[in-house]
Image 1 (tube, rainbow, N blue to C red):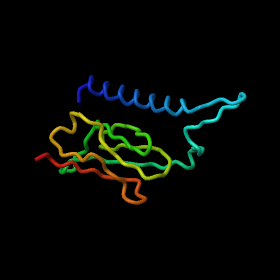
Image 2 (image 1 turned 90 degrees about the horizontal axis):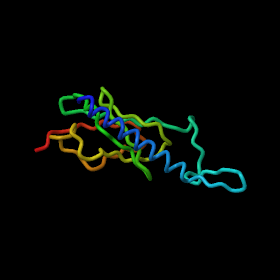
Image 3 (image 1 turned 180 degrees about the horizontal axis):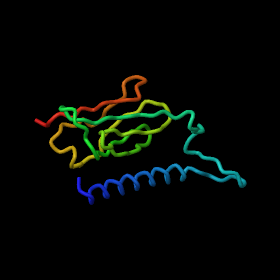
Image 4 (image 1 turned 180 degrees about the vertical axis):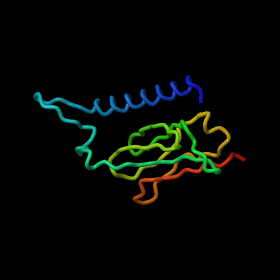
Amino acid sequence: MNMVKKLSVFCLVLCLTLCLAACVAGGEDTDGGSTTTTASTTTTTASNLSTYTVTVKTENGEPVVGVMVQICKELCVPTVTDANGVATWQTVEDTYKVSFLPNQTALEGYAVEENYYFDGDAKEMVITLKAAE
């Protein structure tokens, strides 16, 4: 992937992250000088976060690098696969679906499902892309 594409992907991820942060911050309300967050009824601390990992590879076992993947519940949080084809999120333990953002050059020629789901209490997933027929 050339430098312009890498920079574009980075900027897109940064913009999506900032938008997500703005949505959460937008749920704040003030009441008599005290601030409460209405976007969530639970307090998120480092101790109640879990790591969710998705590895994207080809049928030959090669990592798929630079693909935008998102983990979704009520909101979707995107990230990009690294040099090992791995995307990682730190989030509250829950059931999440995973999907690829559409129209990505790195996915051309592969059959991609619309959504993937973590099995049971699993926090790791391997997505093996097969050549499109």
